[in-house]
Amino acid sequence: MTASSPDAIRAETMTITGHDGDEIEAYRAMPLADGSRGGIVWIHHMPGYDRETKEFVRRLADGGYHVVAPNLYSREAPGADPDDAAAAARAAGGVPDERLVGDVAGAVQHLGSLPGANGRFGVIGHCSGGRHAFLAACSLQLHAAVDCYGGFVVEDPPERVPRAIKPILHLAPQLSCPLLGLFGVDDPFPAPPAVAALADELTRLDKPHEFTSYEGAGHAFFSVDRPAYRPDAAVDGWRRIDAFFATNLKG
Image 1 (tube, rainbow, N blue to C red):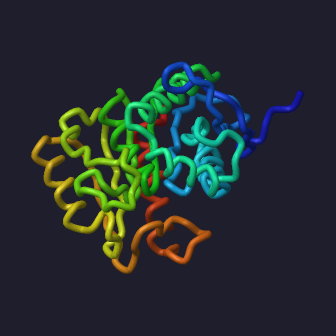
Image 2: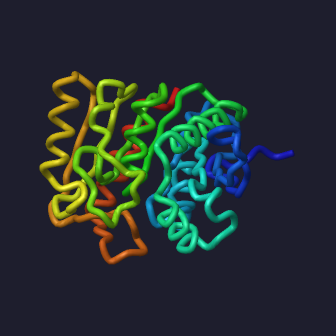
């Protein structure tokens, strides 16, 4: 049997055990070659567990990590189209914070069971997933967290936002790991004052963090399928993500 190519990965839909013992859908990608691997949980954005989320998962796996994205909407709309699942989750009030933490904990447990797992785990998310990444890092023992324009960590959400989403700045003293934050100057949620307030609080608490805000970028600047995509910001953001995870998860 020949050895796997260093850049070969396997990606597939599977099931993991989430909050309260629920079996939920997830998408996993991992290198085929043997090696010591850090694990990353990708938390999808409010529009749902979609094709672009899976592309992000595969990209990180190509960098040498075991990566899992739980489908946070599995319970509300099992097997549904991402848009329909997101609508069902919104109608139900959004993903409760306690359930989110339980699902991420289940994903981390799964990552830790994989061959070659090195015991170091990170979390990353965009949009609502950015807020959820911060929440998870304040609720679980992790080694790295990336918040890509996660709104409503600091500010109160408008009425149109699912009722489960509330400010969580009070959790900052519990942040368990370094935090990388990537934001757009033109984003209304989180707007620059909210980003500054979060940075100030983390500095006050002596929590390690690195924030970058991009001029000319708004919300969803990583999303190649959306008009908000900003190549310069996305390319630099990915460079920072890769370096951050390499520093905190590899070894």
